[in-house]
Amino acid sequence: MKSFSKRIPHLGTENAFSVIGKAKEFEENILKPQGKKLIYLQIGEPSFDTPENINQAAIAAIKNNKTHYSPTPGIPELREAVAQSVSSYTKINYKKEDVVVTAGAKPIIFYLINALIDEGDEVIIPNPAFPIYGSVTEYLGGVVIPLQLKEENNFNLDLTELKNSITPKTKLIILNSPQNPTGAVFDEKIIREIAKVAIENDLWVLSDEIYNEIIHEGHHFSIASVDGMSERTVILNGVSKTFAMTGYRIGWGVTKNKEMTNTLERLACNDTSCPNSIAQYAALEAVTGGDATVKKMVSEYKTRRDLLLKLVAEIPGMKCHTPLGAFYLMVNVREIIDKLGITVETFCDNIMKEANVLILPGTVFGHYGEDFIRFSYVSSEENITEGMAQIKSYLASILK
Image 1 (spheres, rainbow, N blue to C red):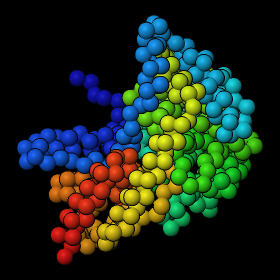
Image 2 (cartoon, helix red, strand yellow):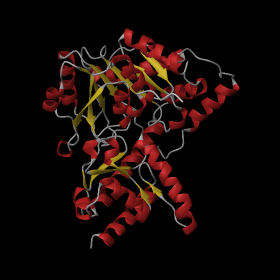
Image 3 (cartoon, one colour):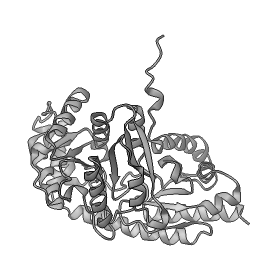
Image 4 (cartoon, rainbow, N blue to C red):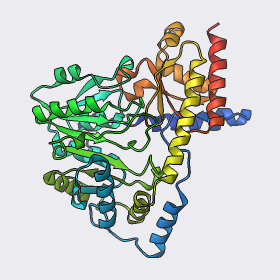
């Protein structure tokens, strides 16, 4: 048989999903026969059910036979609602023509990098980072330039290092705030300085704002709000995290650059033809149906964050900052893994097998995550409390 494309080995994956597969097998074959369970504190899957008004909108779409193809960039009503929503927090006058709705938010990452990057072009990605940014860049022949997000800087981007990372081959900066996996919310002052760098060096920006509604302290500021940036920025967002709609798979890209919206639409047409029509009507209800449920969920996430921070502080050798947004906590475990003489990957594997709690090694999110483990605090307070107690007990038994 003919060999596979030379590109395929450069395509990574989202290891959070790979870890789940391994964990499920361990739970089914090892723990369940012993009457035990695995506590999942690792993935960014909202534990809340999708709000009922949203599900009812999907049901109504089926009953009203809104089950056929939509325009490639999405139904006009949803595009208009998204444009109004983004306009409200950026203070930029977006129109529905500036919005391309896609089958989940990930396609915007793929389409944008596909639209911009030729072999050898460089993409600056703050690291640790959502792994798909780098995976797609390298798959398409681009070069990832990782920019370390340092714990002592509250995981904010260092402007001097950013400026030093730019070369004639730099094409794109990817920003994610609130950030996965650190929970950092980039300071507005820093974002404004990043905008200056982008304009001075004629760079594009992908602004991943998928967690923009999940803020615990401070406020979200979009780089697209800065003068001159809406034409060189694509805002990525969607309904998955904010509205607990991960399975609906609806996201979007928003930009004032008409050539880019046309290109995103062309790529989408070649890929999926159009987003799921039923899911789009559910997303329309989510975007226009009020934010009372969202505020309730975000309030609960903050309560769970504060609980997890308290429990982490009670475990010797663990230390962490306070995340300002999203629902992730990066915990420094360098002291522990050095004492044990193991890698952070082995540490997480041992926690799963011995403490029966699933967490992620920071290296899932890049080289600069090697000192860390990542928790997601979307689980119930009961599970967080039980899981942390099991981790604490296990570590106490091996670090005597």
